[in-house]
Amino acid sequence: MEAIIISVFVIGYLAITLEHNLKIDKLIPALAMMALCWAVIALGVNDFSQWFDSAKHTLISNLDPLNHEDRLHLVEETLLHHLGKTAEILVFLLGAMTIVEIIDHFDGFATIKSFIKTKSKKRILWIFAFLAFFLSAIIDNLTATIVLISILQKLISDRNVRIWYAGLIIIAANAGGAWSPIGDVTTTMLWIGKKVTSGHLFVYLFIPSLLCMLLPVFIASFLPAFKGEISNTSVRKEKEQNSDSAKMLYLGLAGIVSVPVFKTVTHLPPYVGMMLALATVAIFAEFYSNRKFVLSFNGATPISRESYQSPVHQALSRIELPSILFFLGILMAVAALESLGILFGFASTLQNSMPMLGTELNHTGVSDLVVLLMGVGSAVIDNVPLVAASLGMFSEPMDNELWHFIAYAAGTGGSMLIIGSAAGVVAMGMEKISFFWYLKNMGWLALIGFLVGAVAFMFTRTIF
Image (cartoon, rainbow, N blue to C red; front, side):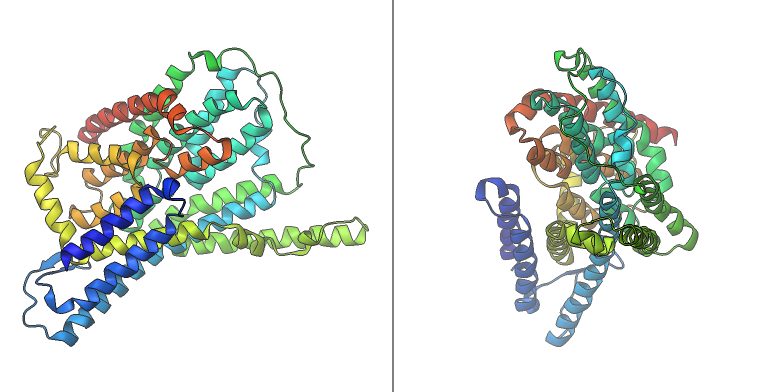
């Protein structure tokens, strides 16, 4: 039975990796993989000799005393446990996505564009790099990439110039998302899974992540693509900016940033704080929309039918449910492997067979090479299942250096290939960037940044 489940997982994994070749959205194999793995477990429940208790993080090696009903009950309890943990992540992401869409409804991100006054290509590069680095830490790297490329399209009309900026935005956004608990799905998973805390994540990873961004941007600033000035300041005529856009931008960002503070003060799961932040932002969104409707109605100003709709309802209709379902499928499929003790056994084999690099610095018993290979692997395959697997493979306590290194490697390693991160995939779609163009022009920059940041982490972990 274990062989069947592993085969289902491998085939599903390959389908996810090759989604562009197969022309099948990755959420479909993810959901199928989840359902089939748990179905095989339920059908072959009497054949398993061990079970992994995720709540206690211990391996139950003798299931012989349990009868069929007791085994089924154990499976149901485990499934419910993993569904609850997965739901925490999904509800958190739903709240964050909705707040971002509400900000966008009020054209709040247009406020950022007003800060850019220069025409120097090099200065614009540095401005967008720092914006991507810090904005991704607040609203996640995927959303930050979408926002900044949208602004970039309004600033620079020449696509051949824009794609160079887009490539560096991907690297900077992924680096920025690694040091924030809400900056990347993988760091959010580690944070909600009680493997890292927001304070230690910042202390351990801010400097390595900053170097991971700074060095590629510094090298790129000397390339011919960033010499001279841009020839135009706008591609199209801009619509009149919403009078409440700046207010909603600052309110929405403040709401998202307040979530780690809420968790620290109340010790409640992060999704509770995110729901409070969403409710607060939604109240102001409804108030500003109703005020606009009244003023427009009294002033007899013609407005579109869409303006009458609730901004919250519109935001909820635009969030990426396929991504939410993909995370559900992946996390629950990995949970199936974890429950059978497969990941636990694989971790033990991996630790015993890999060479111990940096033993004098690494006290976790896990080779630095293993984590670095996870980072490289995240460029080839999705980093979400890699981190999900690591949660079941390793049992180190909260804020152990291993979890912070995994957060860095999985978050920034995907920058080496354009398909290696959600930020890269969305940029690829928005600017039609070629896989091989990115590999040739950005891959080596991302690799340099990744390695320099990894070396920096190996030193910073000995200081803090």
